[in-house]
Amino acid sequence: MEKTFTAADFWNERFQDKDYIYGEEANDFLSDNAKLFKSGDAVLSLGEGEGRNIVFLAELGCQTKGVDFSKTGRDKALKLASKRNVKIDYDIADISTYPMGKNEWNSIISIFYPISENIRIPLFQYIKNALKPGGIFLLESYNKKQLDFDTGGPKDITHLISLNELTDNFKGFEIILAQDIVRNIQEGAHHNGLSSVSQFIARKPI
Image (cartoon, rainbow, N blue to C red; front, side, top):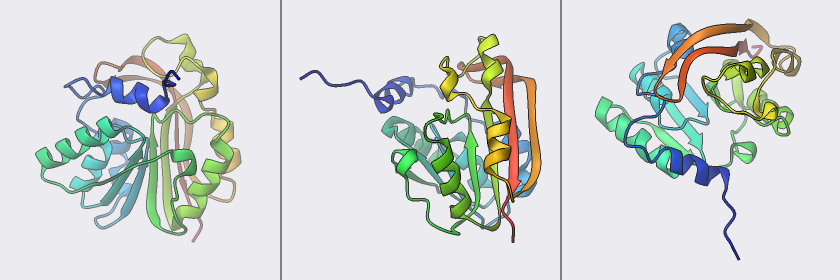
């Protein structure tokens, strides 16, 4: 029987490039909000890819873990961490069923992880449960208007977020930031140029 080509296969193949396809530096929305992360914080990154964001947070003193289903991405993340002289953890897993725990993380981040609409409601619930009281959820994602641009991201609208979904699913949290903007993104070869994104930061009640 012919093997089915999976999403993990897609990302393993894409990450085979010797270069870091989204660059080695952290996403600038994340780095612009570095003040939200304190040394010693436990931080989980969803769809971490090649490690640029958890390596940055590890450099701030955070205890970081990435989760993704790409072994190739994990290998490159560990290589980048070694180059920067920091320690990271990284699990290979399906994020939709990944056990995040309860009241476990100071922060959970999602940077351009294309969350399919069929898993969003349960995934957001996992995130809310997994954050410690006072914990932060930070997300930057392409939104549906990104289909008007050719600068990165999924072509399938079901993998593009809307701000209303985020604010609706995080009712009861303190919404620190919720905005749709068009901004110039320069992240390696695959995120390059004017892009339509949603940016969202919410804090779990204490």
